[in-house]
Length: 376
Picture 1: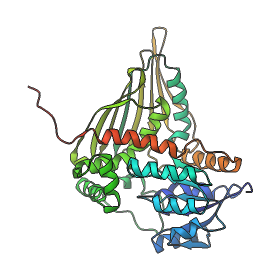
Picture 2 (picture 1 turned 60 degrees about the horizontal axis):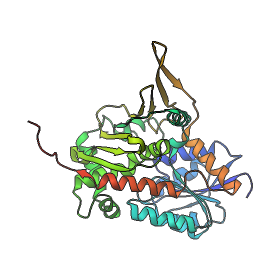
Picture 3 (picture 1 turned 90 degrees about the horizontal axis):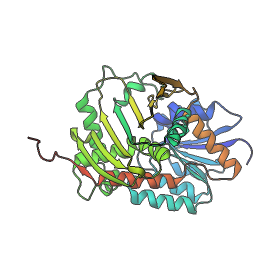
Picture 4 (picture 1 turned 30 degrees about the horizontal axis):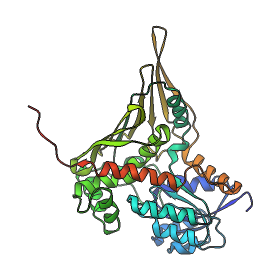
């Protein structure tokens, strides 16, 4: 293989158009988009025309088997199993957006297939490549007595951070702002889909309530980023102590124990009425506190803030660090290319997805959908 990676893209929707396709196209010396696939003919042709791609198909198998493709980028929403299996059968390298699978059984099966395949597989956890996250991990490693970690996601409607992008084929953004009932109904409808129900039930329990399945869907689609980032900073969890669900499954909280008695509190709340995406990871020890504040993943090159609180003699020092303006989505894709060309496995393989799936399952199986006893 030459220094240019020939990329075949499966799924040309939002995340592909906002992040991955521009990243591939901005460095024609490193990447060439040689084939694209999407189930929508209008999206397919608009994107293929935009990036001047001749090979275009509504069947992902055509991209997976193309002799002009070195690596398949699986960027479609929903399940990825069929596209991954086609790429593995064709001997391609694979970059796949999270989640690898829905449910631990499917994730483990796909990880086994990835290990048996001729090419390398990398799972897209872009936060692991964020320069501020890497700086935070160095701080956490140096903390002598880490005691508590808090992860909080306040999630607006996705459209709040997509309206400034020109998603093809172009349509005027819907106005006015999001309706909470409509947002919740859409998520709950997706949680009932036949395609995902088996994996969501496996995460919680057979015959799980709709609230529980909706919450499990958010674990796989959104909180999985924080789950993976926390594992990258802390190692593997020991046990889930509790988890609960409310607001029709569009709000959840869990408490997990890590080594050394560290407790990790994790909350995800849907708040579609305020256009403010908020995602924080906070690490607390007696002598140092470090907080990472991620921007919306739909804003390119927005820096992640790192706030450090420490003492300097009798003086409290609060540092607000901007580590870099480098784009984490770009860094992960460049890492994938470098790994493929070097003939070595990337740093984020299918094994990472399996470890995430185990924690997700432990959270889902601890869900309490209704409150316990009132306190008198």
